[in-house]
Amino acid sequence: MRFTGSLNPQQTVHAVAAILLTLLGGLTLISLLRSPVSQSSTEIADGQEQAQALAQWQILWTEIAERGEAALQPEQMDVSLRSAGDTVFMRYRNLWKNIDPAARRMFQIAALTNDPQQKLMWLEPLTTVDAPMIRARALLEVARVQLRRRALDLATAAAETMLAIPELTVQLTADAYFILGYAALEANDLDRAEAALAQAVDRDPGFWDARQAQLLVLNRQLNQPRQSVAACLNRSRLMIENLGALPTLAQDRTQFRDIADRFAAQAAVTNPAFRLLSGLGYLWVGDHDRARKALAEARKAQGQLPRQCETLIAAQAEALLQRHF
Amino acid sequence: MHILLTLGLWLALLGLAVRWPKIGRHRAWMLVLLGVLAIIGGSRFWQGILHAAWSGDELYLLEPAAAFASVWLLVLPSLWQRRLDRTRLVASLFTGLVAMAAIGTALDLGHLVFSRFSLGAGSLAIVLMISIIAALVLTGFTLDRWISDEYFPWEYAAWCAGLLVIVQPAHPVLLQINPAGEHGLWTLAVLLAMIGCLAQSQRSHSSLIWIGGALVIPVSVGFAVGG
Image 1 (cartoon, rainbow over the protein chains, first blue to last red):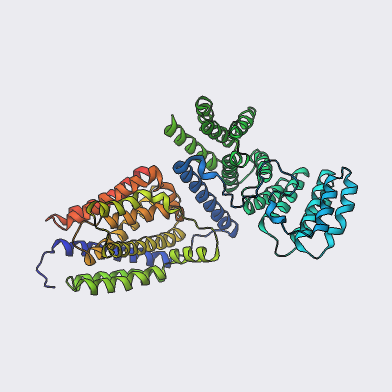
Image 2: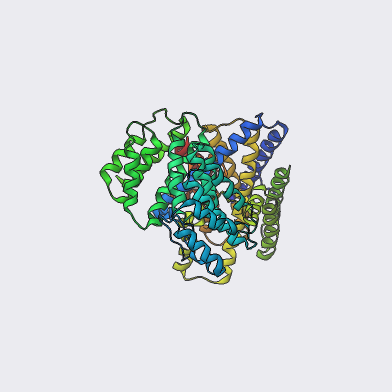
């Protein structure tokens, strides 16, 4: 290359790129010479949690913008699933195909027995057998019976024993986490209920009962006066995910309206997250008047939730209003 | 320290392009391929993505469908020109690698700078991050022109826009300006305008003005969107 005093266009763009890279090199050097921004370990953890919550919140809305409520419908791979309203731990029939006939008979007798003590008596021997699937199911049935008797500690203990059995299918462990979550909810331990139900839904996104219970727990948690931005965003996101998933699992779109009505009816609580949720529910069921009203209310920050969380909710409500009305 | 090495590698590739502008297409391809693979392999961001994919951890990326506008732009010109041969495909993937290296370096540098300065989420943070991205996109463009100088580089704009949409959750500034908003069309438009300016700079006597325009467009639009 001969230096002629002026650069041709190609050389100019190369020169500019080289200058910019050199500047970036300088910026890198200055950054490396500085110590990291001082933050306590709690602040760093909070910051990371918040960034993660923000990222998941953004992903949720991008998917909703692109695919609507279909983005929230859980995939159901197992055709044996009986989703809605099934509380006898036989949601996945295919799991129990190869069960020992004698054990099957004992389960059937226990199921037909009305007296809880009799049920427990029939199930007790099965909780100690070698076959892990039978033991697991027996422990789950015991936990469920104890839950009905409101013996919450015994129900929790049975579910925890069941979870300790190695190599269980994911769907079965989801059932145990549901029991743990439900027992914690009954005991009014909302944090433990929230964590356990999140595990249940993570492990089995098609678990209708777990999603219903999770919606209830998140509803109560979002009404708590003190919560972090990350918790507020995560709870709002999970509620919206449940709103989108429940009608699919129940095969009934009127659930959109039921859930929307439930949250809109909480008139005393001017919580923007609930307004956004009911607005979305009405929008997806086609009730545009109520959707517009709920979303307009969601835009108003009420000081009910952390400020940043309310701002993000208000921004989404505004975006929905602009897109659909 | 790895970022300094990466920037050194970019400069070295740039130096080769300046020293031997007519080195021959295959040699240029080989040099750029080795360089960008080393940059991608050394990028903490791409290493993190690979590790998360390998270990089954959650990937903080938008799904590729979010970048559908860019994908269409990659496919449509080829369909229109009825050129769907292997050479074209390889050239496009090659361009994609250059774009991946540029975006990966920008994100690594962004994370380093944001970890050392308290920039918050204000206008300065947006301007700085977009400037870093723009500088590396421009550098990638110069290398892309070195290896394929016969047509307007639609692919480079589409790859960069698509990648920015997909990696949106990877940096707070990207979350703030939301490249995936409006189906990623505005990001694609900005990248096309930027690359258009750069392509024009190669034909014009006022190269510097066009290059300046190419750098100002993304910064000003990003500032308007997120500032």
